[in-house]
Image (cartoon, rainbow over all chains, first blue to last red):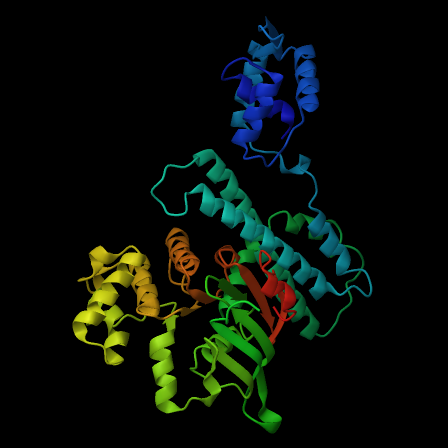
Length: 214
Length: 241
């Protein structure tokens, strides 16, 4: 996803000027993706150039508000209907790091795994604290549902990472007890590994759960 | 410095069997849990999590090292003394709730107090207060089989902390619950700890461990890492935790 689509989606509600767009964007995504004003304005000028938005004049303080053109509106509609393109998201550094760690000689892989797991759990603790606060400690108060959903997404993502790390550890421990057959050439560790790790959630979880509960 | 921890384990080891058949379940583990703290223990099966919990609650004795509850070494206690300590100072919460099916919620919670010799009315009063604190006082007269899993686990937490008991030892308390209910139970545990109890929680669910102030990782009977605390002087000065 790009900043561009996020801003277009907000402008579909009503015309806004840059600073307000930025504030709205951050408020609704729970500050997980901070933008600077400059970024917002350069994006807006590009959108204007491409005919997706148009200026609707200045207010008393000289701020220029923008609204969607019909092309812009169609673009937003299309975006809501399309799945997120996973291939265009940044590659996961952790996956690459571990793939390298198991192939490079002399790396203390369990240590790499544990270091990451501790860090991820700290992150998970922070998120959980935020969630606890967001829901008013107990359960009665009204809360900001958008913020809560963003938080829970981050929580589930972090949890999946811990599970995957548990799985990596268990898998490596099993491998270590097996008669060693050195990986024949690249296929095991190259593109194959990366293809597998793009879905740490489904295939690995079952094995992971059965192994930790056994 | 500061207050006496509710639970302190000092270089605790537990070896099962002897000589050639000896299996080391726990090796030189040190940790402290203070009032107001919830500590989670994570680790693969066989890492020593349950052994740790059993030692902390006096259900098992260490082969080396010492366990202190509210400053008192439980190694020195024999039979009656140990049983009294377990009744008065420690509460357990299990995966499968372990409520007595023929007793109502309030009777279950009052039971440890009554076993400890308290009068029934007084025990009931304390039990009602404990049920109220975990938000299920309206279920006081219900039997376990008329409650949901989440409700039963709340009652179990009330039982664990009824009266003056300050240490709750929870072994996979969310294991039999769905995700949402499990979280509600964790929330109750968290709130009881915020209110002054000390909690030690064994779990393999990272999302649940994350409710703790500190997560300790066990591997082959050894503490391999910890997330540390949101920095109190004590934890900063204690290299073991």
